[in-house]
Amino acid sequence: MTKVTVEPGILAHGEPWPPGDGAEGWEGGAAFLISPADTPHALEAIRAAAERFYRIDEFGRELTDAELDANGNALTPNYVGAFRTKRGIVVLPDTKGELPKLQGETMVEVLVQELESHDVEAYISYPDSDEVEQPLDLG
Image 1 (tube, rainbow, N blue to C red):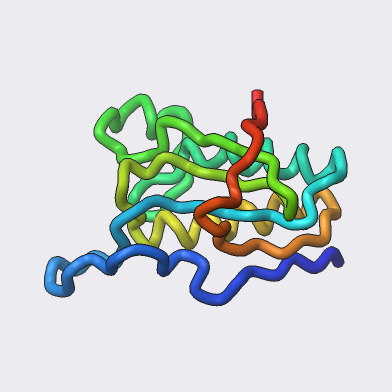
Image 2: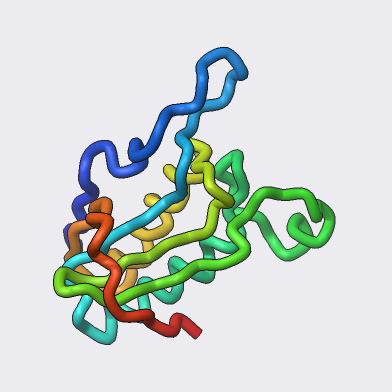
C-alpha cells in the first residue's frame, strides 16, 4: 500500500476559536502542501480531492448532490485554488476565513484517500507563507 504521511498539527495554524461554544476550529483557512507532486498520478489525485472538498461542510460531512441542493446554507468551500511550488503543490480551499476542526479533518482524510487510491507516495504539510508561486488550473 502507498504511504501518505501527514504533518502532525497540520490544521492548527491560526488562532484557536474561543472555548465555550462547543465547536473547535481556528481563524484562517486550510492549506495543504503535497510533496512531491510532480507526477500525473499526483495531479489526478489532487484534482479528485479538490472536487470532493467542495462538498465538505463545517461538520465534516461530505454531502451528496441532493444534500447540497436541499441545504443552501451549508458552509462548504466555494473555491479551491492550487499552486505549484518548488516543493510540490499547495491546495487552498476557501473556508471563508475560518477552519472548523471537523471540516479540516475530513479534508485531510479525503486528500489521503485520493493520494493512496492513485498510488501516490507523499507528505502532506502546511505550506510556508511564501510557498505559493505559480497558479495551477485544477479544471
